[in-house]
Image (cartoon, rainbow, N blue to C red; front, side, top):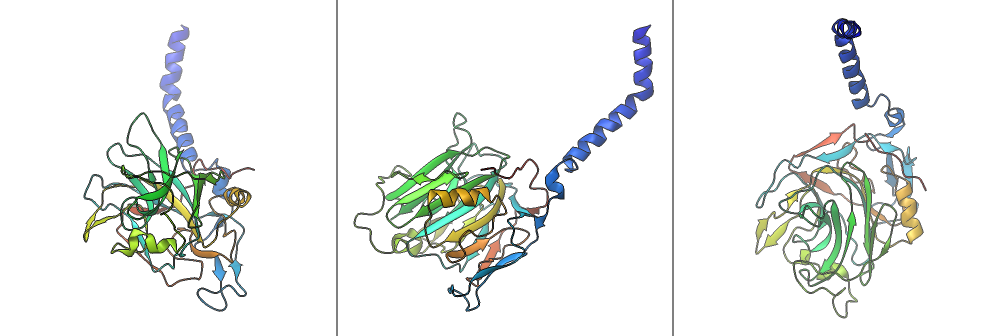
Length: 330
């Protein structure tokens, strides 16, 4: 009797229960119950650096607009739809950004959606070849070593350099930082920051900076010998005698808030940058030389260059990027 009553109940109300379950799922998916859905957000270009005396000046420099470290309205998501060697995938090529000659700090927020099990996925690269210059990218395709990202600074076709590896989980935003003063290097994730030890790449000997390295580090970068001189996000570039080989998997994930400074910082300052969150405004306006929030456009809001961006598609401005994101807590 009870079984019959239960069956009759399901027959009568089953569709209503199913519809309620679907409605609840959609509400969760749309972020109705996520407090960040209703949080104030930084609109594209809502905060910018103002340089009254023009590019490459610091007199009177300040932030103008609504600059409250609000989370951005959008982040840039790469679909990673193209795979395999010899393919370009989707990427951004930032040109004409005046890179510092010796001292640099680079910060970027990333959210991998997946890792490649074939070739290395590249998030960002400054330099001529796959592992020359400054970069952030997947460190391993071995399933036993999942979710490993590397940061590197290398000279002289990767004969010298530093490297760092860390666990960067999928579907979670992670703060990346890498820096050098031309002799030493530092890196870390999510507010951690430590001196890097010399590390090899592509089987080449690597022992820190080149012997006697005292001049501008950019002069010994491979990008001085024919490769592109911009910043590439979403896929690395390898240039071999004028032939471009895109030997990396297109990045499948989100990126936000690329900042480049012409100085280095203390560990406490790096932690403070991390605690500002994905929408953090420049920490030190006197030393910011490039600021790409990647919030609905690809403009540089450092007021320091007439940069331009080439893109190849394979991306979209994600208006729901904050699903699952929580602001860092100190």
